[in-house]
Length: 239
Image 1 (cartoon, rainbow, N blue to C red):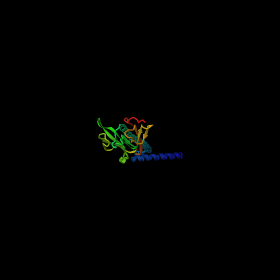
Image 2: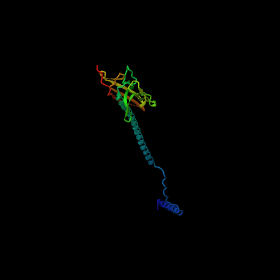
Image 3: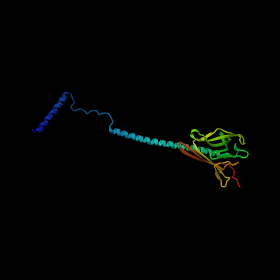
Image 4: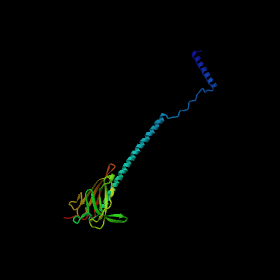
């Protein structure tokens, strides 16, 4: 017998003795693997971080789009407000009547007076359901408080047709935050007809009035233009 074989047999006998001794003591010679330890693997953490990154990106995009839509909605609302004020002025001015203003005098009878930032005229205005009355109307810029200058309208109740027979009413704000208001008056008695920055012609109405309304809201500027043709202006003068 060679020496390596004898050594192998000796080791085998030692192993059998060890197993027999462990069995007599009631010890399992082949221990079971321990239970898995609860926790997160590295792949779970990476997947979680990836999901958080995707959700965050979607939220940023959504919030950006929401802010953009809110800005567009506000800009549209402010522009519609300026356009509504312009349409109101167009309708009111187009109904101007060739009647003396309360500030008229026997030597200077004015049917309409105005400059670049102010206009006054007589017109029939609705005062209720199927009811209307003659009013002397003044439109001008005034103090709008925290919103800045405001375009306001004052209606004076006319009592009869005599100059000075008017009772002023309270100013009504048409729109606030007005940065500029510019009226122009078309005189068709000139050759050729021209737009004037003011109107004080006696016993005549301008053929038309145009204006530009500028409004500033939340740091943004909005503009609206209007044009009112006066049907009762009368024919132009002839030389």
